[in-house]
Length: 116
Length: 113
Image (cartoon, rainbow over all chains, first blue to last red; front, side, top):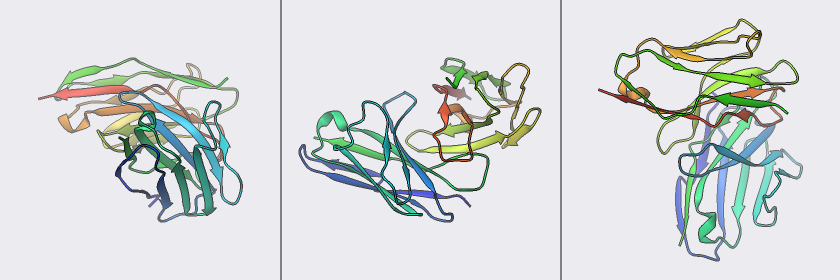
C-alpha cells in the first residue's frame, strides 16, 4: 500500500513553455501533498505544501506564480512550471501523507525536467 | 528550530561489512523518526520508522533505535550488499502528516564487491 505515482517521469521542453507534473496517491487519500526539488547530489528542498481544496503554502524564495500548485482532490496534485527556463531544470519529487500514520510521507518516483 | 544532523558522506564499504550511519535530532516535542532511502534516479522510499522512545524500526536487515536520551536514531546493518548502494536520509515529523518532514542532508553509501 501507500503508493504514489508521478507523471511524466522525464520531460524535455523548450525555454518559455509550461510543463505540468502530476502526482497521484493510488491507494490512499492524501490530505496533504508536498513538492520538493532536488539538485544533483543534494538533499531535497521543500517548495510547497498543499492541502486538498485550499491554496498551497510556498516556502520562502519559491515563486508561486512560476510554480503553480493545484490540489483539487484527495488523490491528485499538480505542479505547473510556467515559462520554464534552463535554471528550472531539476528533479522534482512529490510526496503525500494521509490522516492516519505517524507522520510519514510517501514519495513519488520523481520527474526529471530538462529545459533547453 | 527542529533539525536533523546526519554524518557526512560518502561512505564506501566492502560487501558484507557492518554499516552505521549516525543521525541525531533536535526537536521541541516528541517526534516520529524515519529513515528513507533513495536509489539513483528514483524518489525516496520509506525504509523504517519509530514513533516513540526505545522503539526499534527494522526492515530489509536495517535497524534503528529511537534513543531519547541521546536524541539519536542511528541506522545499522550487519552485512551490506552492493544493492544497498544509495543515499540514506534521516527525517523527523512532529505531526501526523500535515507538516513537512525535516530531513538531514543525506549520506551516500557505496558498497563495492
